[in-house]
Length: 324
Ligand code: ADP
Ligand code: MG
Image (cartoon, rainbow, N blue to C red):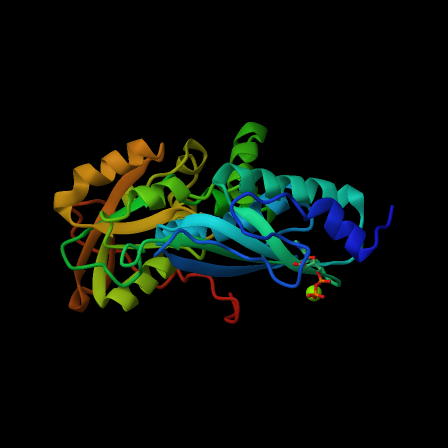
């Protein structure tokens, strides 16, 4: 069943709003951040064939498109407020739109973020979301705050999304149940919003892991002007990944991408507060290394007291404009 543009928007993308002063349907939405708070704004674009496979279920695609944007708000310690949806799609079919909208709006409901507008056009399947959140001035978690001596932490497990991708590529085989779990990590990431909020005033720097641990850590190092040491054996991983050959584990953990976990730093004296933030937000957190002076560069050791750092040349991070 084909729908017209406005019918489509009305039916799927005009949920009632409670926090926004005015939601979709007019020329602009009107937002009302809490008095004195700063707005945190982030945009992410998902293109079929590049950011997701055409085989993904529409409900999961809707979930993931919003999840990756919520992950950016989480990395800043921002409280989700509202988002807009720019959608290009080949055909206006209810069989795609209904589950897509459901996956997206269910996650939105869970995190108290409201769809307040967007734009819709016919074209190749592309999803652009702009998410807006609020944070008290001076409390946003930034990439630039890491200091030598800080501990380096990650949330959750790393590498499962990449492991799932390797199964799709035919490079790795997994039993059905294990594949289901890593596929879920790839297709239905859970943004660490409550951890980001709990880390306000504790973490010195934060970033969400979208392009691979080493690459995203390099962003923190550059913005903070620091070096870093990582301990490979400390990196948290699922049982499915731990069962893989060491070379596969290293690639998935260090260069995996699509993890949507938080990488953050905090002074060693704040370790108990970090653990408490993990417990309060129901999110596992693991110390995986240390921030060093810039002169130390980036070093990865097999374990915490290792002597010889590993050769990192093999673990390039993902860059859309560089050949793999
Ligand atoms: P404009 O003429 O300003 O481009 P449109 O005709 O594109 O407005 O959209 C009409 C209304 O529907 C606007 O309020 C817009 O925010 C909303 N809208 C359009 N597409 C979407 C979408 N994909 N999701 C949510 N709201 C949408
Ligand atoms: Mg428009």
